Image (cartoon, rainbow, N blue to C red; front, side, top):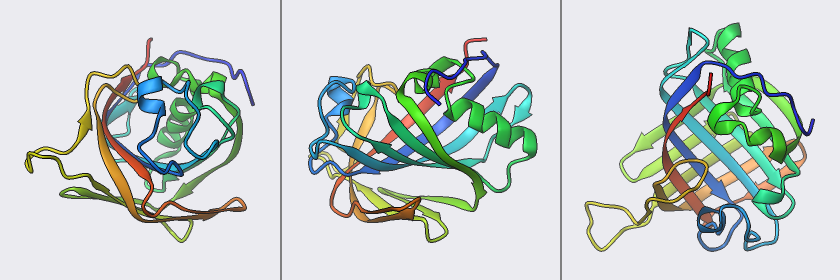
Length: 210
């Protein structure tokens, strides 16, 4: 699956990306841009993407949620990612196909680096991807396969979370620091628990290059 073809498409996604991973301390990938090893040597993670506004080649994808299971053997930037995608069961066929194009990198633009980093798509399916935004907390439920809750770290100013700003990270420049409160993955032979481990919340504004 490595070196997938890029077919530039007209697409955009505005919303929020949340994730919880196996790193004990805050994810070193954010500041090293994927060059520093994860704290445990490997990166196991789930990601959830809330699409507040979006389209793919004229198809409206606003309101859709996407979940990803991500298994990275070493440094994020070295690739060999294995990824499973869970696409909102409410998606039309065109929206489902478009979202898979975006999240495999094949649609070009912001996520095009996935074509170099992802070595195997271990699964892609429609699923009831529920993502809840509740103040400083974020929750994701994909049946019994992924059940996660993360919470922003409290900052010295209680109005604002702890944050890494103005980064060159691929997700977006501003990353809110969070921690997993209870978080379990049970799918594709993976049995992971990220409670107490590194989490991120990132506003996203992604688009194609067409």
